[in-house]
Length: 507
Image (tube, rainbow, N blue to C red; front, side, top):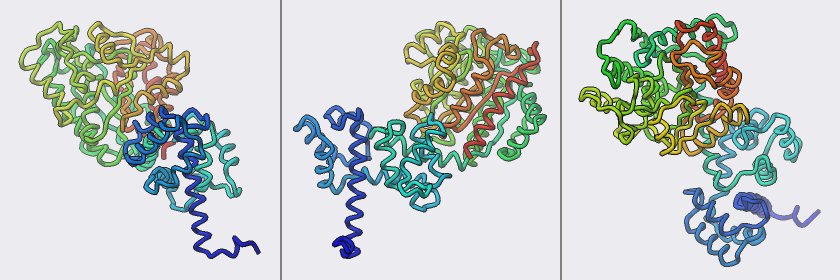
């Protein structure tokens, strides 16, 4: 019998703990070694420390930076020797927390039901075939499960799954959101039947059109029945331009006195939907009320940073000071971001308009803007005006053109959106049907050539919804009265179907 077999149990337990600790330190070394050259430099340490926050004790960070600065670089053996002398080093604890977040049944291993979640968080583009091959490669005992040691081996040796130390907090946040998304995949269908913000009446009829189209599709009825939770007390009379006529039609924010209370009601409905743990799908008439959707999300999550993916032909970031038309469907992002754009002003709105405008900017319940312009990204925007162009340029708001979507593929466009919004806590997606090309989408008030094909929009949507931070999706500007091709219902339904299927997959 070997001397090791004769060792007391507590000694063997200590040896196991030491080996596990060394394995964790080894993994941490690979996380610091961002260029995978087997050595960590002062630049790599400084880059990691900037993003680490509470992950690493400040004293440990300073000590490591000083050591590396003295030696120029630090190899694996040198790092392990240093790490063993730092009992307060907490990075292993964070690696364990990541593993525990995925280990939902507390078994200490990841089963075939659990490890796909981990792989999706590490690399959303990983194919199922490659994922299964990686699992087989690191399933040391052939049990079909992944142990904590297997997990450490995965993230430190596989290029497809390699993360940097700076990604550690992001990964934890992502996994928390995955868990949250799984709990809140049921849908609350929010209907905002208002078309006063558009220049051409009729978009309000699109809400009923889409709901009726879902009812006619057996597969969608099944998904909707499974996912949809009815929202009580949301039945309100439609607010239509055809009935309102020109009353309250203030020239620099038309119908703002009527639209403002509609927005307040819509914001409250979106907020209560989120507070009940539901995923709001907003069926809206014109795009003006998207400002209310954003306000509702901020009411429900006041401490969270909200990102916006705006899929539209138009930038919709005019204010009463810059608008050439006065139509409020061109203003929702200016409301949400509090952006008056006085430097590009061409109008002097009357006092009543400016007072209502200021109240809308605080619709979410704070004097601070509901969103930051740095947390906005456009897709398929192509019909803009000088004041909007100035805002986009001044704030470096990314615009993913239709050509870029087509050249790199909708999936890559979606990943670029998510990468731009890497720092946000939650994401809202707003889909205006005029983002589709005018040759296939006539049933909207402001069609524009050079837009997306329906299949591109579907693939873009599906990829975006894989991110668990996506907490709300909206579709708007469906105007059946303008649909000379009788296609708007079918096109909108294909996008809506992709959303339902994507949310079903998140369960």
